[in-house]
Amino acid sequence: MLHDSTDRAELAERLKTQASIYVGFDPTAGSLHAGNMVGLLFLRRFQNAGHKVVSLAGGATGMIGDPSGKSDERNLLDDDGLAKNLAGIVPQLRQFLDFDHSDNPAKLLDNRAWTVGVPVLQFLRDVGKHVTVNQMIAKDSVKARMGRTDDPTQRVDQVQGISFTEFSYMLLQAHDFYWLHENEGVELQAGGSDQWGNITLGIDLIRRKSQKSAFGLTWPLLTKPDGSKYGKTAGGDTIWLSPEQMSPYRFYQAWLQVDDSELEKLLLQLTFVSVSEVNQAVVTHSEAPHARSGHKLLAYEVTSLVHGAEAADAAVAASDALFGGSVAHLDESTLSMLAAEVPTVVVSASTLEVEGNLVDLLIQADLATSKGDARKLLKQNGISLNDSKATPESVVGPQDLLHKRFCLIRRGKKKVVMAIFD
RNA sequence: GGGUCUGUGCCCGAGUGGCCAAAGGGAGCGGACUGUAAAUCCGCCGGCUUCGCCUACGUAGGUUCAAAUCCUACCGGGCCCA
Image (tube, rainbow, N blue to C red; front, side):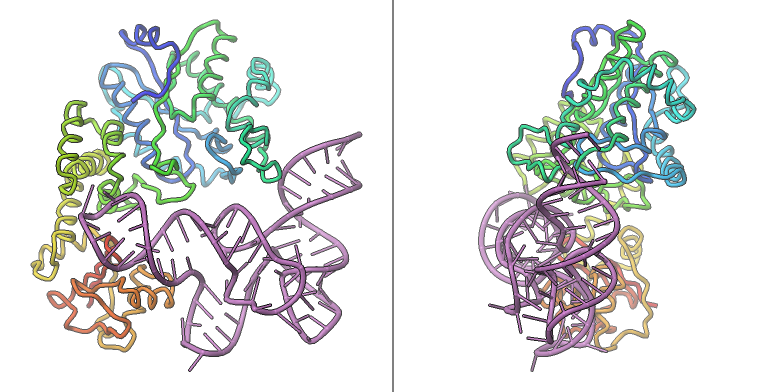
């Protein structure tokens, strides 16, 4: 659960009475993603335990881009994009935290509020003066970008370089912590393990400026087995929390398909399932891995946290229908229900029986990127209509329709689109 | 500003006049095997009206029968010097 913390004993002592904690979220996209969930649940746990929690939307820092864990310079966001992203993220924060709690309501702050008006000179004097460049370049993320790495596999001529802008990111984050400490009484900052350097810089700043102590806490970063981050831009699918960007069904499926070795960690980090239940689930899973009970638990819990129990139930029902075996015998109402869960395309019935209509249909359904791609898939046995494999010669006709209008197209094992003819 | 190196397909990276839609690896995608897993194996992996054609090797020109490969200018990146 925890990766690292400042003086743990002292922190534990402090947390016996109500404390105030913050976690920052940068609005780099219009929706939060799986990687942000750990932070959200982290805050929620603290809130449940009676502490004050502050979620910080990085309206200012989001404009800069955190170099941590990034090998490339980021694109800067403009004001409009940023505002749009913030608008998408705020409701998601609300979903996880109780902002109306009578005793310790969560707070949502935007660091833009105290950053945007600060004159450069003042910032340099108030913040810059307390931080040495030596400290800053000692950060791994910075070192890597400056080619000062000890890693012999890094060739100097391939190093990306780091702009002063990104280099300054940590100052802003440190300043945030300081500001929150002064004005909101925040004593603890938590974040992913990649945030460690940024957090400690803030603690130092607080100590130097106010002679007060503050705490830092990090959780192990959610990573996939190959080491890449969950839900981050660099490669792989991003698991979005917003239903517009990822339907609850696909969201559910994404968790159902996680690597076995990830199960325990994900259950602990991303759900409120108790430790003993998690242990139980892990045991059950290892006894009968093919039943995949653990995955189902994880997927259900996470989906209902993000999308609500109703959506989670629907995702389960859809999954059962799709992976339960034959689809042809399903009744009309079940198919309609499915159509609401999986991606759909509406196609004109006039295309039925037209030579070559399947290729076009696959493109329309977004199951193929080009005609060549579609043909290739057909040739490789990758497409099936309802329950039977299609061939390059296949033509979609009335015989392929269920209840006169549905046709379930599968690409490979997992990708499914419901075509509705009318 | 000067010097030097560099810019290739999703990524890394070979290729230094024709045999290049471009080696190799990774990622990705299909198939087999499975548990909607991992590992493994097989195939695919720019587009199309697909035995052929078109578009592509930073951008724009040029040399040549022929250029990713040579020349020029420009743009972008790294390092060093100022």
